[in-house]
Length: 257
Image 1: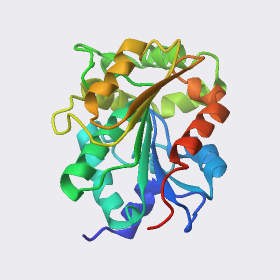
Image 2: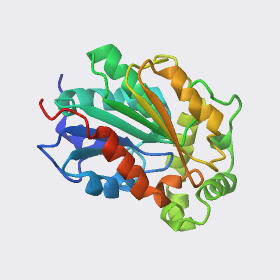
Image 3: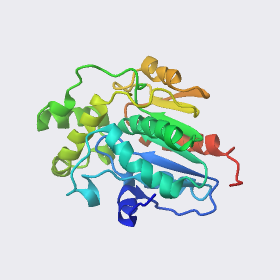
């Protein structure tokens, strides 16, 4: 499989290389999010866990590139990159919000096409794939309405919001990501074999607990659910607890490769 090095470097960021790590964790950002969101996670888990973070087109250093507004298409971009370079040791996946849907799609494709079963899928802040909402239309709303939705989910956390000027600059990427998330239907992947840990804020308006528990229907492996205080971006305030959970969950991965 031939993968251009420039594509690898564009799509997958490796902030703290750890050649002797027991396991890799690929982090997949939320709608409008970027790879740098996971820099602190990479720093905290290294060197035991080597963290990779996906950088989608249309943001930060990829701002001028066309956005990708489809979960299956994003998965099709990432899959060959993973298979070419990043599956020589156990691989776990973490996705928040839209990223959780992408993590699920990737987990299924890795298993179907390469026989690689991730050691864990962490699905954060997202309803189970089968619990989609018909008629979700945030991606079709005007700019002001889209900004209002982002602010509703972020609350007062400026680490998510930034300022209006910056937000408006990345609105095309946010709109594209919302379209990908809202129109995603699990057509190629319905069930995975890997363990799934579903994570959610107990006051998340986008991910009711019953819909989060339904992730169990999508795995034949072990399943657990953890609820934390907070809303859709609970993972910022709860970062120490969440990182501890990830570290403990991956601690049992064999070091022999």
